[in-house]
Length: 239
Ligand SMILES: NC(=O)c1ccc[n+]([C@@H]2O[C@H](COP(=O)([O-])OP(=O)(O)OC[C@H]3O[C@@H](n4cnc5c(N)ncnc54)[C@H](O)[C@@H]3O)[C@@H](O)[C@H]2O)c1
Image (cartoon, rainbow, N blue to C red; front, side, top):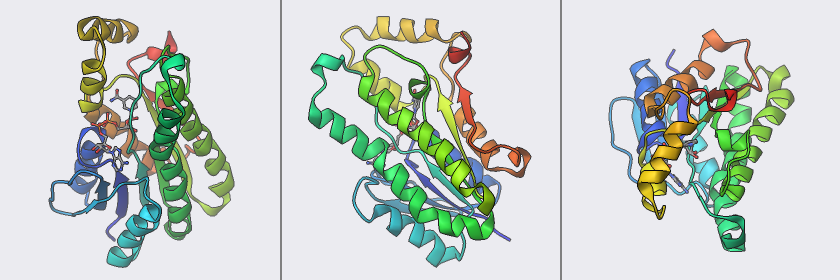
């Protein structure tokens, strides 16, 4: 039996590492991203903006049409915004919720009936910003807080159907996401030093470290976990 997954934000960073780990385990993966996803064995690339209406149904539908089943949904696509609250506009607010929150809801809604048939699971990529306060991230933190709470809600709503719903909450991860955030900072060197000093292990996580936690949350080894928000943050929230 070959397991089937949908991964969003699959072109690079954490999402790409998840795709590589899943295919190495024999999963077939529909890998969705607004940027082209590099093809490979077991990968069905889909270039799609997850915020578009109908995207969730199209991506989930592709997995079910092509492989006849869905075992795992990884909601990982996301954007960052570091901006003081007084400089944050309504458009910033709408744009971030449109990518970080509504698609997560839509993909879960589209996938859950199929996951109930396989007793599959959902893993969402949240953030430490959804768990603790961090200056100048008001809207980003709200979006990730929403992902945390949707994870808990769906874990309870679908437990009796055998679907597990969990999330990872990464701290700083060494991906293009952080590079771009630093480049937008007036003092990138100071920004990096602050980031490192806030993480007790003294470094950022690697994208593969986060991917390993995501794959664990999808695996039988974590069968007893649902509604769990697993921090992968080098000790950030333990401080
Ligand atoms: N890097 C970090 O420090 C960090 C920390 C905490 C949480 N996260 C979360 O991890 C997830 C992955 O981030 P990453 O670090 O791998 O970033 P990344 O920028 O390397 O990768 C994100 C991917 O999502 C895709 N994407 C963005 N908007 C999209 C859209 N509308 N439709 C389709 N695809 C879209 C991008 O094209 C990109 O390939 C995000 O949800 C992010 O919020 C990252």
